[in-house]
Image (cartoon, rainbow, N blue to C red; front, side, top):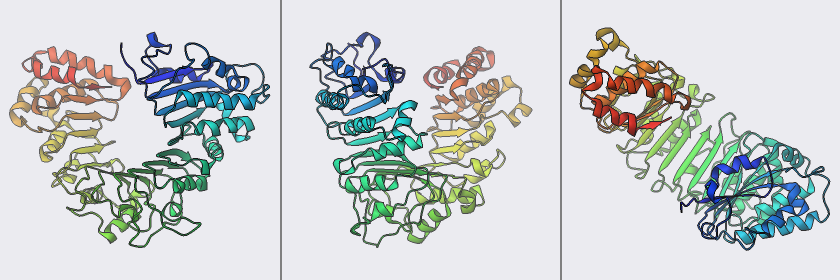
Length: 510
C-alpha cells in the first residue's frame, strides 16, 4: 500500500475541501485506515464553524470511521475554517454552542495526542467576524491554538492584514509557552508578537515575521519591563521581511550581549534593523546561511565592526545580498561596487554567492567585466540581464565553480552573424569543449524566441559535460521542448544526439 504522510479530514462540505484535498491521502484511501493513520505526520482539517457550533462536527468524529481513531505521529495540524453551509446566520448561535466548541476541540486533542504545530486559515466571511470580535469564533480560535501544547503558530492569510491582527488579539499570550516556531504577518500588533517571542525566548528555534510597517526590534533584544537583555539559546533560524518600510530607531546592545549564539540561518529582507553587530555576535562558528537586504546601514555596520573576514565564518555556505529598491542606489552607484561588497562578506572558495544585478541594468556587453577575479561564485542571479551565448560561455569559463545561472534567455548574438546554423555545433565543440565541469543548470527568466533558445541550450550541452537542467517559466515549457526535440533529430545535431538527449530527458523543470 502506498504511504502518504498527510491526511485530510473534511468535517463539513466547505470551500476549504478544494484547498486541503491536495495534501490528503490518495483517493482510494479517503477513509481512515487504522494502519495508515498511525503513520501520518500532518493532519489537515476542513471545518465549517456552524457545524462546530451545532455539534455536527463532533458527531462526525464520534462515528465510523473516526470513532476511536488517533494520529500518534502527527506533529503538524493545519486548519481551514469556513462558515460552512449550515442554515441560518453564523452569528445566530445554536443551543449549547459553548459546550460544543469545548467538546469538539477536546476530541481533536484526543486524536492528536502528541505536541503539534498549528496553522490556521479562515475564509472571507470569517475574516469579517474576526474583525468584529465575534465571541464564539474568538473562543474557538483560542482553543484551536492551544491544541496539544502548541509549539508553532502560523497565520496563512498574508494579504488579510486586519484579520491577522485580530487573530493575534485572540491569543492568550501567557498560556502559550515552549513555543518552537512562530510564523506570522503583522501590521499593527507589534507588542503582541514581541511579547510572544520574549515569553518563549528559551525554546524558540524558528522566527519568521513579515512586518508591513517595520518592527521595533528593541523589544526583541531587551525586555522593556525589567530592562534585562534576552538570549535565544535554541534559535537556529531568524527571518524578518519588511522591504518597503524603514524600521523604527535601530536598537543597540552592550558589547557583551550575545542574543543569538547558535544562529544558523539569518534572513533580513529589510533595511538593516540594528544599530550595531548584535545579530552577528557569537554565531560565527554556526552561521551557515545569510541573506541580507542591501542598505547603507548594512554597509556601514559591517565595515565598522569588520564582521566578516576570510576565516571568520567557516560554515557559511550561502550568501545572498538582495538589491532592495528603497536603499540600493544609495548604497552603491555601480554593479561592480555592489558585487565587490557581496563577495567580501564571504570570500571563501566554497561559498555560494547570489547577487542580483538587475537594478543596475547590466547588459551583455559589460556583464563579463563585473565577474573577473571572483572565482568563488557558484550561483549567479542575473534576472533582467540580457546576455548572448558567448557571454554565457565567457562567464562559465571565468568562474570555475559556477553551477547555476539565472538570466534572460541567451541569444546567439554575434554567432548568428559569423556562422551558419549547421556550422555551429562543430565550431563550439572544437573551440570551447570541454569546459564548466561544475555547470549544471540554466534558469531562463523571461519569455523569448524559443527556437533560438533551444539552439543555445543544445550548444551549451555540447561543451559543458554536466549541463543537464533547464528551468523555464512554467507556462512556456512546451514551447521550448518541441523545438529541442526537432533540432536533436536534424543533421546538424544528430552526431551528438545521445549527449543532447540527456539534457532533454534528464533535466526539466517547467
